[in-house]
Length: 252
Image 1 (cartoon, rainbow, N blue to C red):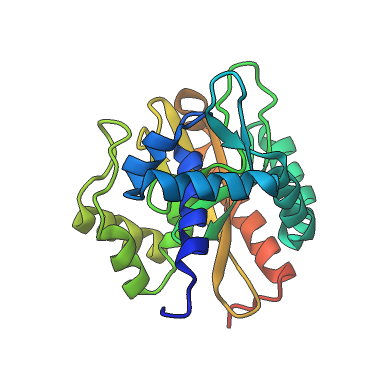
Image 2: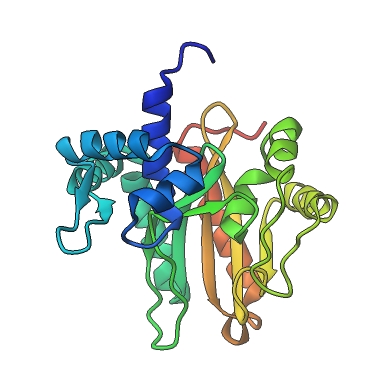
């Protein structure tokens, strides 16, 4: 990795730090969190600001993400064919269940919801698209992680697993057993692991190289999801199958 520019890498670290932080951050906070000198952080922020990636609040003197990042993000989504291709299939699943349907992709070591169709019910669960999650954190994320190489799974589970609720799996060995079951079943169903009172159903989507590149999930309040759970699971799996075949996948 000697060919990487440390200044560019640190600038990327600064930008990523905003993803899991408050809207605005100061130089001192960034410096401490990333173990960088204040002068280095200040120079990076000034450079990023000059290109529109960062902007400074003139009242608080703190920094926030700039609109150039929004433009780049929208460009990624426009060019990401899977989002446009999957949209009508997500809509069809949403129409038949009236629950929240989402499309989740793997980006490095994270999962990101890149599209969704909201539930038609007044009482409903919501997900924030474009937000990153660990690959073990949600049913949609686990439906991707379970089909990755074992060495990659081990690397993801090497770090402490975050506890979201009392039902969260926090032990790596327990999570590996869960992922193995997902791989064997071809789908994931979970309740209360990320949010209490919420049940999700997710299935992997394969590409032409037989790699799982994303997943589709159906999410709703547990008390409304339990009765039709089996039929909903079949719908989710069927939608994932159609999407996979459309991407050139053939299950021999």
